[in-house]
Image (cartoon, rainbow, N blue to C red; front, side):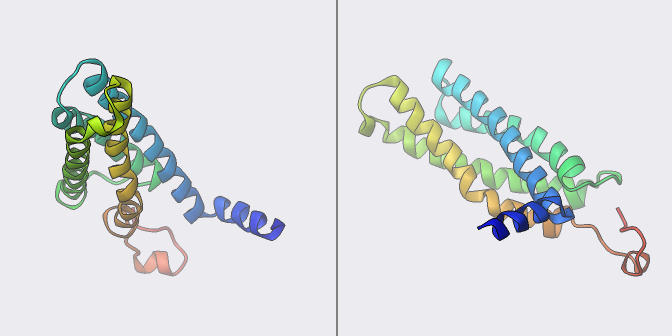
Length: 164
C-alpha cells in the first residue's frame, strides 16, 4: 500500500502527472461554472432545460479552453483557429448536444422523483452533470494526444526543447 502511495506521489510530480492534475482541476472549475449557471437558469429562473443546458455549457467552455490550453497543457504559441479553436468548439458542441439531450430527457421524466421542485431540479441537474462526467476521459485523451499535443522537432528528440 505504501509503495502504491509513493508511486502515486512520484507520478503526480512528473510532467504527465502534473498535466493530468491540472486538467482535472480545470474540469472542476469549468464544471462549477456550468453547474452554477445551469442551476440558476433552470432551478431559479425557470428557464427550459434545453436553453439552460446550452447556456451553461457555453459559459463553462470559455474557462475550460483557456485553462486547458495555457495551464493544463502549457501551450504558449499563438492560437490556431483551425487546429485548436474550431476542433475545441466541435468537442464543446458534442458535449452540448449530449448534455442537452440528457437534461431534456431527465426533465421529461422528472415526475419519477415526485412533485418536489428541489428533487426535480436535482434530477435534471444531475443528468446534465452526469453527461459531462461520461465524456471527461475521452476529452482528456483528445486534448492530450491531438489538440494540444506538442509536436517534437529533431532538436526536441535530441534533448532540446519541444516545439510549442
